[in-house]
Image (spheres, rainbow, N blue to C red):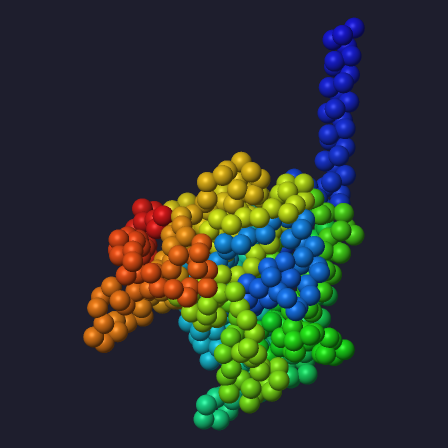
Length: 479
């Protein structure tokens, strides 16, 4: 009798488990998690509420952080948009890419981009496991047909190929740059050329497209990966009509608040479809904020490009450089209800390089053999199975491979771009103790010369590893 009851219990458990799995598959919430990566542009660490903004309200991002993990020691891989995006999508420092040739600036007259023949992106890896893959927004990794997202494993693309400040409105220092109107591309076809009025409507268009992509993937019973690369927080800070005067701090705050509403729309869509517990959502920024005024941009876009230089920032510096914290230290939130506990705070050194190995582990996808991936899987840290930090080191590289900084534990070495004339060798480097001086105000290099020397050695090792990675792809690791 006991054996019979035990067998009946086991049979019931088996049927119940199979039924739950079947229902989950029907809802689009199978064992493989859906992945949504929302990447802002030129957004500073403290430009959103849950990271310390005192004037810009971001309730939806605050909600996302309350239900998941907030990374306070997270770095964008680089200080510029193109390099940072490429590094995030490949898990590799940008100077390694394209056989060590790096990436050119993404402009209407550039001829190259991220090479699909040499680089393997997250989207290509996830497609091997049946994921529906979509990229919406600002691509910035090559506008020629061979470099577009559909050649990097994305089933679907709706967006612009480079930043939306590179249209005919843009004036160079000596007059017009004569850029064409910015193309809006669906997959590989240009569906229209955007006037400045069209640019203001892009955030709303991309929001609708993102929610539609999610619904379509669930309807097709597929796990999905959505890379949503927003445009509104990059100059010019255009938002749709009716939202133009909503913010407390001018056009930039309007842009941040509109982006927060887009996050809210995506969260609502996920909730309505019942897939919250099987969807990983990450929000971050590709680099730090614009902090200085630019006459050329103001002449082109007026108040939508006028930077408030009185705005206080938690970190030193801004976009376009990887030497000081403000260029690459950005907010990052990860939500995965039921797997990652709410109100988690991660202060360890992490970066956008870690997203690819984290997502592939969650999806059950093996990393490509014979290829250096600089990032590390963060799931053990997020779920409490690992206490040790995944990285002790992070390197601030320029896209061309020039080393700008070395982060080691709580130390930060700022590396000069060139020797100062007549300066002593040690004086050319700056050392900061971030646990007591996160603003990098007090250079302590003279007080701790042995730390300077140690971090310089780390930096030289990293520089050589980057240089030699194409010759010794399986043996040359930075960390």
